[in-house]
Length: 113
Image 1 (cartoon, rainbow, N blue to C red):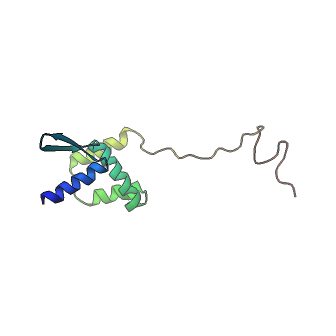
Image 2 (tube, helix red, strand yellow):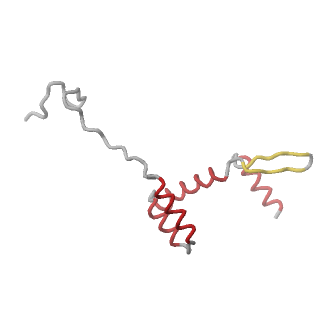
Image 3 (cartoon, helix red, strand yellow):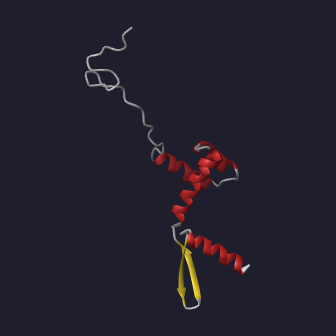
């Protein structure tokens, strides 16, 4: 068991996930990345791989996987009401009237038949 744990810790150290401090014969390991950052990374990865980027499916699955407390419901509602968590969707802007449009030559009135 010890060698298995040590092997995992060495792999994680090599990947930069864990930091090792050597104090005499003792090796002290600690996380290299904050728990919150790791959680965000994992959720983003699961969101893309498992739920094809659908936040709705992820949330519905998470809420349906176990009974949640009234406090958790209040916290979720407060978070949703706090601000708009929808990222802006970039929409192409229509060409401005009277300005140069690189798609059509200047002075053109559109496609000619």
